[in-house]
Length: 536
Image (cartoon, helix red, strand yellow):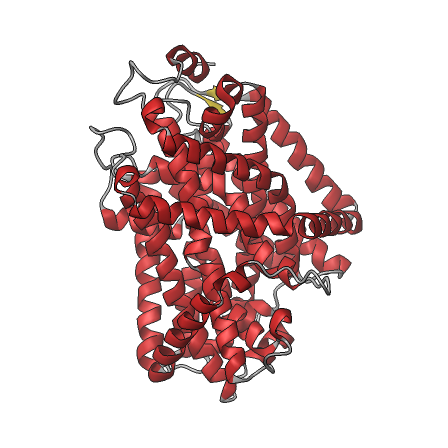
């Protein structure tokens, strides 16, 4: 760990401490009020700004495609022309894949396609009946939207903007640095501090939601394998184990802990996919996954912009807007994390490894698991019944009952789910901690273990309270409670992400003006500002 002088960034740390203390106390003292407040914010965000969520996702996707196929922009290297890569392409890919969204992939890989297959999507309820061939196409193609390249476009654009701002413009290792092209000096003052607070609040809420989902799924797995009934104490013990593990991993630093976990995690993913493809309904998987891809391309814009405006239903809120909210919650700080490990890579490489490849992996995962799960359900696999009786979190374990070595697969899957959430929490705790400390070289220094432990405990406590509140109040299911938490915490960040998009586009179009590392004499970035702010 670096011996460089590190201190607490008080305006950010104290504000977040007060905010989360208030949220946790309200959740403990008045769970009904906690749940009602969450519900009100979710309804307001979805009904008034659903259109902005969808348009933002489409614009981000367009930007990624633009950078990927632009020779001029694609040749820009994060860190400048002389920067060298800090890790191999395989390590870079698996960290990018596992560091941000793996918990969602392992949870929803079976649950989402089966839900859409057995419960008609509103915009197509007059087109198909649940459990039919048309239902299968709509179900799998919808997961392609939610878990394909569009999902990763959020992270990719943020990583590009922050990477150039920090490593090419030599601005501080903060999200607000990305806003310099549109705000100038103001991005480094009070506005920047507010932006960083919103980013931490959003990400901590998103990570808490992911921790909650993982605790529920691991609890369901324990129940199925051992007969143990998931309770508040079981969830608390699971969360405690997750925190202890990722703190140990985080203490070793990104170069060791996250890299090791991501490598093992990714190999298990590929192993599970190959097993299901070979020992599942292989022909059906190959045909259905391909057919659904064509259907998705044909209906991309219909699926991307559906808001159920006429009937005012909640489907878009609980699904598409929920996913985009999760992405928005993670986007700024995942962007920081991805930029940190991508020094020495060109923007073309960055877009390939943070947009196209992980997005392609998501489609491959859902194509295989989604197609197989639908085939099993049609042939009496019992997945939907298990979800109704034991909860959404039981879907994957009911799925494995249709395959050979089901108990071994379920146990292996629990290891995968555990590693996934540990990898996520590890990388994000490190990034959150970096925003709450002051250091001249915050972009490279490892935050103190005590700060990481603090944030790990806070996020886990919020996850547990959210689950307990949902079960005690009974107004929403535990899974929907985690969705509500993500939407609530991410809503203020929606506008920050829009500002980041505008600023990043300006940064790319006028890159010659901002390229401080390669052309310091002609850069418009004030060098004295960088020095003063980093040593604040």
